Image (tube, rainbow, N blue to C red; front, side):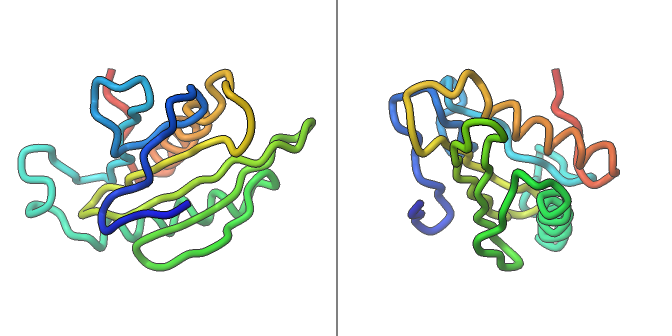
Length: 141
């Protein structure tokens, strides 16, 4: 998965990918994971990048605690991981970037056309786990 500065790779046309850098109206769009204290009005100025980095570190610990994930590369500001489905052993790629107090995410299947919503559910499960741990805001309805 390649990325340009501050942009995650766009999703293909197939419905097996979600990405925080897609347009909001896209079916591929998924909200970034926002750390506690992030405010939409002045997001980049009102909270520090440190909050985003702490959130990414917590996400990394979450991934390490689940057998389906393997972290491939990690810095303070980014993370690349693989997720393997338990039965058929399909591999999906996860790419995350810290931007201010939020973590932008892309999760995409390597093979096939449809993932039956697996990538979206995976990211939302991570978001819920981070919210439960007091590290992230829950997704607003």
